[in-house]
Length: 265
Ligand code: T3D
Image (tube, helix red, strand yellow):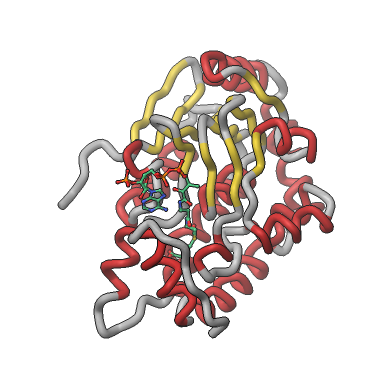
């Protein structure tokens, strides 16, 4: 069944706001939501009246990563889904588009950001989070490898010791902890989140936008010059993890709301 209005777009004073809108699923990435996000980013890039972009989520989640309910349905078919292909065609192009777009992109992290939802926040240029927001590298908890850029985004944004621990254990980070680690620009009360993000966007729009665009280009070159190669590497590893019994068990356990019983294969 097609869901309605799963992504909302608003344009105001040169700022384009994209809202992921599947609140009852904590804005998990269904295929349709991914396609709509990709189209929305292209629209923001093309529209010369839009000078800065904010990405946020409706309800109490920012984005809970891949939609595990639809994964469960697709794994029941004889043909196992290829997660490598899924990443190459769906999520990885979004990460590349956000890094390549020469307009500042702000993640307004209103709630939990898990799995590829955390990657989405990490790949943006700025991250402002509500006090209630949290961050989880949920991947290994369901038998997967961090993807959509998480392996290199996290380990380049914060110290490798902590980033590796977060990827391996998948423990939840509060906004306060994420800020202290250097993952966030600011933490604000939920009621002020969109106001703060709009103010930052308007400040950027009012500045030397060509210089900002060139600075983003230089930053990409300095820090993320190998983004496409690393996304491809993650996809090739996810292809292996996605065919494992542990991944099948991880998704099944999540949907059955129980602890998984992994076998390491
Ligand atoms: O498959 C591929 O395409 C490859 C790419 C993979 C990239 C990935 O992102 S892998 C990681 C996928 N995400 C996760 O593993 C996170 C799963 N979610 C959670 O662990 C928890 O929901 C949270 C920690 C995010 C939040 O916990 P909590 O207790 O605040 O909320 P909840 O009760 O678990 O969730 C609320 C509802 O959202 C619930 O539905 P219900 O029972 O009320 O009908 C839950 O099932 C739904 N939901 C949460 N996350 C997802 C989801 N539904 C589908 N997919 C989800 N990822």
